Image (tube, helix red, strand yellow):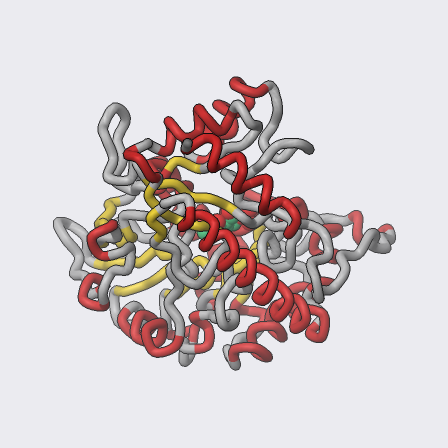
Length: 387
Ligand SMILES: Cc1ncc(COP(=O)(O)O)c(C=O)c1O
């Protein structure tokens, strides 16, 4: 159990749900769902007619598929068609489905500090896992050689699973480094799941692996996107996988026996959000607003003696708590103020119950849901809890 462990502890200690008005949801991974400065408004309604009440198509409604294709072809020259896209009820269902259908002789490689749910998914699916060191001693930035991985034991293939930008660290690969990664995992018996949930939250600009994939039909690369963060609508539950046509066909079958498609109403709403002019505005505004927040909170946390390792993406700060305090100990203090962070140990992909973690003293501080005017109060609470 990942972030929910923290949310349940918070609810037990405070009688409130983190995110309720008056709480300080620094553990939470959702963005503001209101118009951000310079950004487009979020529609208050959509029109629905009787045809929209029918079952949705297995891998997505044609207008949404067309909008996703246009989006990637316009901004990244991706060269994809609607046959390369499958729509899911959010990013996690797309990730879980991809990992569920990976061939059994595949070894999954992932960084040792990663997005909490990967740990649970890989455990439930009993996948063979190889960890790429991502720790304080390499500043959570594995070098290129660490991605050069051969299958071990009975495995014949390797599939990389990577959030980019990384949740929790914010470390983001772009340009030549991302091209190299794509090339490495485009080869025979190689594949990758590149999770771009935070694509818009990148300084200086959004980036996607699709810019570097020459012909996705010749690869086993899955690029996962979602309306959750960049389009600011976690509650719509819309995500997607971009992959070779032969893989999308597997998702089509899966959708018909295991999912039944994704809410048509949500798809209509997200189609509107992806209008090219609107989405261009959203990309710029999200990048600007959250880069400012990253730098402001970075200065504040550093002044409180957090040792930060944060990269240039995402909406989290990742760092070591001052005074030898663990993330859990800090939370006990914060809960009294209706605040809480995500203890770093929940991002440790090698964690085990009753075992200490290298990340016990680390925390992920989320500024995703925070409005620009909460800063002073946030710093005040932290300072009192550390004092
Ligand atoms: C790294 C990463 N991938 C994917 C997701 C997808 O989330 P959802 O299933 O809410 O669309 C999230 C959200 O927290 C995330 O942080």
